[in-house]
Image (cartoon, rainbow, N blue to C red; front, side, top):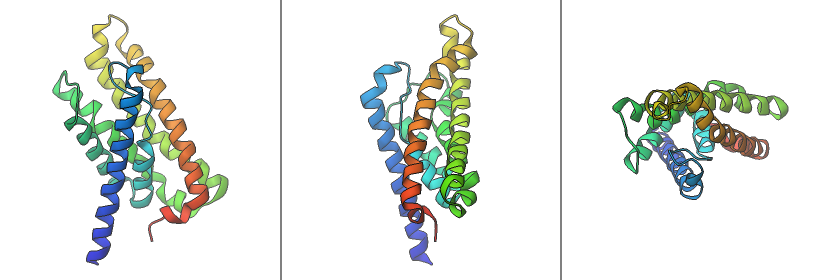
Amino acid sequence: MRNSKTKRIVEISILVALAFVLDYLSNLFMGWLWPQGGSISLSLIPIAILAFRYGWGVGFMGGFIMGVLQLLTGAYIMHPIQVLFDYPLPYAMLGFAGILAKKINSTTGVKQMIYIWCATGLGSLLRLTCHVISGAVFFAPITGENPWLFSLAYNAPYIIASYIISTVLLTVLYQRNSQQFVLK
């Protein structure tokens, strides 16, 4: 029993660390495209694998921890509430992809692919919602534009691109090695 619990903690830790590294690298190489923050990132992949493997609760927790790591390693803070909506909460939302974990792990082929796309789409949509709220409430008023449209226009391109690239890669991973990702 203890060995199983240790294995689970190690797997969660590795996937959260991988999500953090992937996000850090994307910010390092592509951060200049969005000067106020954000980049096309593959961090969805390990968080989704975590959520598909252990369920949405563990995915939520893993994403939250990843967001806290981001916060601790170089956050741009304007307001205490913005901290929550820009860092831990959006990445925690990616964990909601685990809502369809049973369907993803019990199907194959086209059905599995559809579930993966829907599950990661839900997580990405919830992440986008958090970033849009943060941008509209705390950043966009500086520009003098409609804060909600400005925030949506700023955040949507990199989150949609992250979703598409990550989901294509997840689909390929699951099509080739689905049994490696299913909890036994």
